[in-house]
Image (tube, rainbow, N blue to C red; front, side):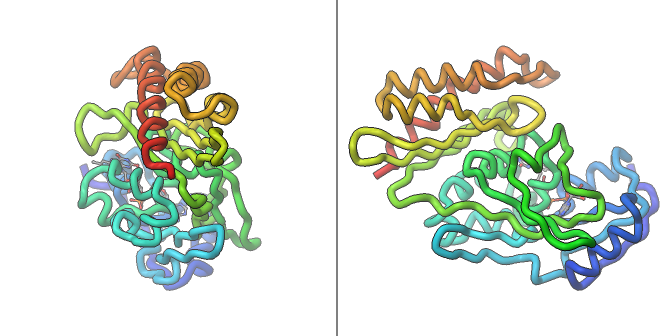
Length: 287
Ligand SMILES: Cc1cc2nc3c(=O)[nH]c(=O)nc-3n(C[C@H](O)[C@H](O)[C@H](O)COP(=O)(O)OP(=O)(O)OC[C@H]3O[C@@H](n4cnc5c(N)ncnc54)[C@H](O)[C@@H]3O)c2cc1C
């Protein structure tokens, strides 16, 4: 099928993109990599009056690091992230998650901002943002504001970005020295969206204890931070028994729904198994 008719704008700056979004009063869509939006247009699941193409705004594509944080311009391609030495060294969880995102052509066009703004609950980047407790910067007609993942993700494919706001930056805390990370997921075919995905990071404290970060994808309308499972690791350490207990607790924390792809029970079981696998792999990598 072909998309319905739309006006097309390719502004050269974020300010002009925001002005165009405001002009259409909620009836325009931002076009980033187009990997989710174009299929939605073709299936006529989206019928915006206009597309605001932000691909010609070079100022929205960058990776910048400071002491504690790595910042990504919203238009940074997933493929750039996959091969960035800064990401490999400072946000290894994001690098690992990127390898699970679709296929090479999708990652060559798809962007970090588009993936997060699209808010597919099975997608990897929203789970990484949630696990690491990062933040996004939105720019609207009244200026910029910062949103935490808990504030940003509202429900399936829905964020709390206003229709005239552009997501301009994603900020992730750099991994502490010696951290071990792993992203585990299960999908029926390589490149498919995850039935369930688990993002994990652990940091040994040197006295037998550890800090942990855990979040799941594909287990409900938004990514889930598995805080009570993290607490088990923080209290009991990184031994096999504690990791098994954390996996069991993770399965209790999620409320997946049954759909054509998998039952809720199966997704809960995957949550347990993948949490254990992710924690064990993160443990093996932690120094
Ligand atoms: C076959 C296939 C398999 C895929 N598999 C996976 C997968 O396994 N995991 C995964 O995570 N993704 C997967 N994807 C989706 C892919 O990662 C997309 O790139 C991503 O979901 C959207 O990013 P995009 O840059 O293409 O955004 P677009 O498709 O251009 O936009 C998506 C939505 O976000 C909005 N948007 C985009 N950028 C902004 C912004 N800066 N500010 C405000 N709103 C914005 C758009 O208006 C639109 O509503 C797959 C896609 C395909 C076609």
